[in-house]
Length: 139
Image 1 (cartoon, rainbow, N blue to C red):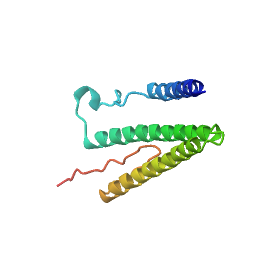
Image 2: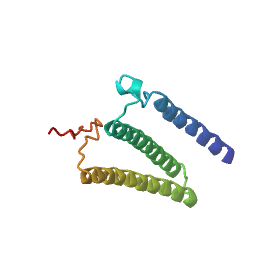
Image 3: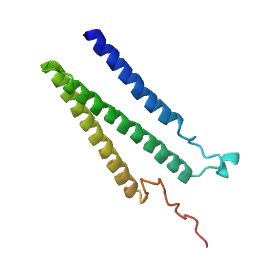
Image 4: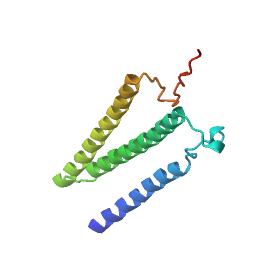
């Protein structure tokens, strides 16, 4: 029975890995080649900030996917425990770890937003739009 469970877990892991890998491969390049600063390398701080937000969104998406995977693993382990207290505890611990991971992820978004607001930057998390401040002064 142990070998069958190991093979089932391996197949489930390969399926999950294929979903994560295919979503990562579908992501466009981080560097926007249509940006006029791409040819000259004359990037501004706003460009770097937009790339950081883009990378953060990718990381948060992967963390969300892994949390969903942990929920599924914990649920399947809990359902297939057949009354074995160790497997029940393993399933419950996996679900608890997924909840804690999601709470930490949401807290990190709130901390980053608070940090940006402290710097006077407002941004839309859904679109990643960061308003460019006009710092030029005319005399």
